[in-house]
Amino acid sequence: MAMRDADKDRRKNLHVKNTNLPVKEPLSYHELKDKWKNARADALQWEQCAKENQ
Image (cartoon, rainbow, N blue to C red; front, side, top):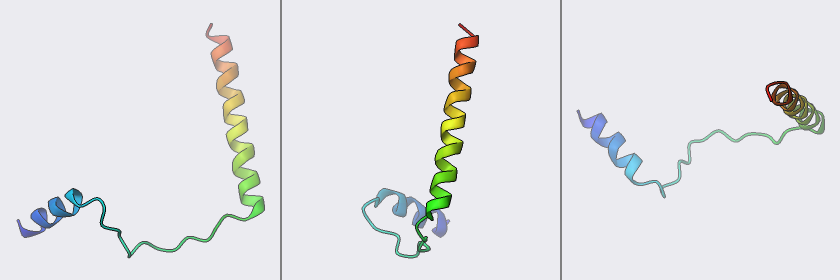
């Protein structure tokens, strides 16, 4: 029961920063390029699907 109350209080105080988050390294150029290509391919695929469904 005490843990449930603590979680409830934590959700109420959204302005409190969680300092235990792991530090992430920024993505490399190649990783960013790969993600961009995948996102672009997905967008084109959805666009084609939308045209077919019209």
